Length: 385
Image (cartoon, rainbow, N blue to C red; front, top):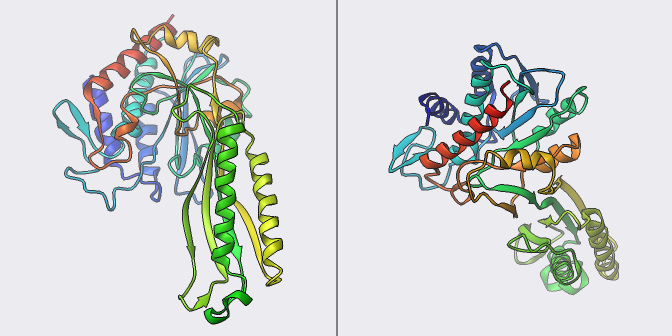
């Protein structure tokens, strides 16, 4: 691994870019690095001005480029049993430890290094870099950047998302919809419970409906054997309600998600759950007219489906290590948004393993950094005239 890559990685990890914090210092560091090679950056901030996306390009502007993309935010370290400094690179046993080392500042360091090398060359098509914020909380931040890139006269030829895949090509992942259900009842003394609508009971009936929907998806929904779980999944992750045991609760909220195959329509699923909620409420209103279930959409991002025969995939495969295969994964990335908003092919491929992401003492293997570096050097070599 080049000394410059390691130095960049150390600087990147030293920035505390947990999603709740600002990433502006990191973005400014990258902007200055690129500017030192004459590469200007477009900065797209969020509404608060505390966070930003970055887009940069080097090479002939009139041609579609190869876009390297990564998110700068990381998950929290609070409450985790770290034995090493979280925001400092520790080299030990062929590994580089630190929060974000594999997810995904290792790739970002390699991508920045490739951009700096590209600035010294004459390219047949541009090499580009996109850095986003707030990916970890639902691929939120990149959307403002995509709104800008959508209006550009020339869009990228392909996008490479550097999530940790051990340098395997991920061509598909599931989409995700996150929702909150507000189940409303009527307060009463618990001795009169049958005379009031219990919000927790409504929630339990709604959860039973969600479990029924999971059964339908498993038995009748789309299937794709390339996934570990070959059907769309439904999951309740949080629930809260009630003030005291002797009070019939008037409110219960629950958060649920769907991780859907691209062939399964989230809107259709949601409509079915609204119909189920209406049936539950109709029965509850025999007891109390205030009974209700409202469903709020918290966040939605699309799945990804890239065919291995497209030109962009064939181009990248020319620089892949022998034995590099194609895969589909259950976790989401920004790739579906790039594909949907810009209508460009997307491949997810980066160093490190998703098994290390989000854990205490997160690490990336030095050998994986070497593999990523060789891959990007091959890609850049193909762009040089």
